[in-house]
Image 1 (cartoon, rainbow, N blue to C red):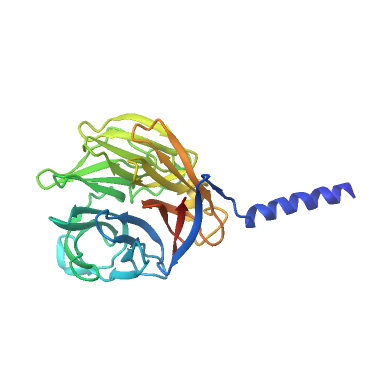
Image 2 (spheres, helix red, strand yellow):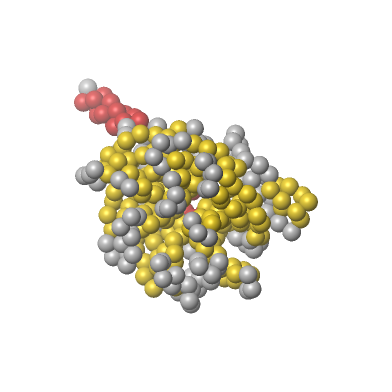
Amino acid sequence: MKIVYFYLLVYSLLVGRVFCQETFHSRNIHFSHYIEGISNPEDLFHIHDQEWIIVCSMASSTHPGKIYAVHKENYQVLELFNGQLPAPHNPKKLQPFKPHGIYVKGNKSKGYYLYVINHSTREAIEKFELDFNSSTPQIKWLENIALPAPVWANGLVIDSREKIYVTSMYNPKDTDFLEKFQHKKVTGRIWQWDRNKKWRKLSKNQFSGANGIALSADEKNLYIAEWAAQKVHLLSTIDGRVSQSVNVDFLPDNIRWSAEGNLLIAGQRGLPKEVFLSRGISEENMYFSVMEIDSTLTVKKTLIRDGHRNFANATVAIQINNTYWLGCVENNKIAIYLKK
């Protein structure tokens, strides 16, 4: 009988692990509600002097790629772009829109430009003009910038001189990249583009799944999330060298700045290969973390540690006043957490 009870206990623990909600919030942060109806809201960008949040809706086998705007006060959702784009080097030929990382540059006086990584028939960055002068935002495609052949881009930032910095997660021609992720072996690096020199390799180091990226205020450094190796690095824009690194206990995805001038990093808790291949919400991609790290990479604090069948696989966190907005993939909602 004791043996029977033992197996029943083991079974209940295993079942409980699959279906329970694993939750930790910093003492003053609590889940509030969802903004629903946006498929795979993988990346979010907060334009600080505007009322709208720009959202990248990644393409999937069932949903086309789109760009949305969400009002940060009343949560109104607007579809800004859902269409085909001219192919790089061949404007007469159209290609599907498969957006990924996004970045908005500009201000009220100079106007705003949206840069979008596009995984289509060819890897490229699409540049759009954003117009907030009407009652609702408007968007206009301007140009695309073809990426080098060995690049599968993930995140990007643009400096004041219009230099573009891009993380390459892996080489699309490398059929072994998932196994390299699993063993934390190098798969990609950081690339830089400008109007004169075009593309060049910036980073002296290579990374296992280069993912999120942020630019320091003085534009002398980049912050790089090395997804598969579970590290965040400080990398010089001058010589491309890593000067400092910190370990985290999850797969760090997108990086955004907090209101206090710290790094907000969201990511998944699981094995790289399983998380990358999982579809829908599953045990492999269910759990996630949001961490705040100061700009010197010396102080870090877990803000949210969560995951369940309603919301999982978080990829990005942004702070808007006293709330945190979390984007994700394999889901159709944005999660809002309240900071009290």
